Amino acid sequence: MLIIWVWLFVAGHVAAQDNRITGNVADDRGMPLIGVNVVEKGTTNGTVTDINGNYSLQIPAGATLVYSYIGFSNQEVQWNGQVPFNIVLQEDSEMLGELVVIGYGTQRKVNLSGAVDQV
Image (cartoon, rainbow, N blue to C red):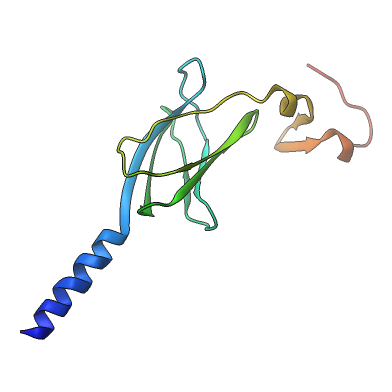
């Protein structure tokens, strides 16, 4: 009988550790943001938002999530158990001025050599 109680306690405790968080990431005008990185702080556990700005991730209760997207300020938020967990990211116009988009990625202006054209 003791073994059953221990097993039920451990199974319930392990099940309570991880929770599925879902939500949406949008800009300050309410437009969904595609490809926002959503990562549990201090881990490699993460995902990206889909075409509608939606995401889903398995995290422990009380975890801190980091939302990052080029041209927007990073945001760290501790999850309070609320589902859906929607986030609004603010544009970072200063950061946009320091990035140069190239065919397959980005580079900082200080790392470039040669001709650069603005579009």
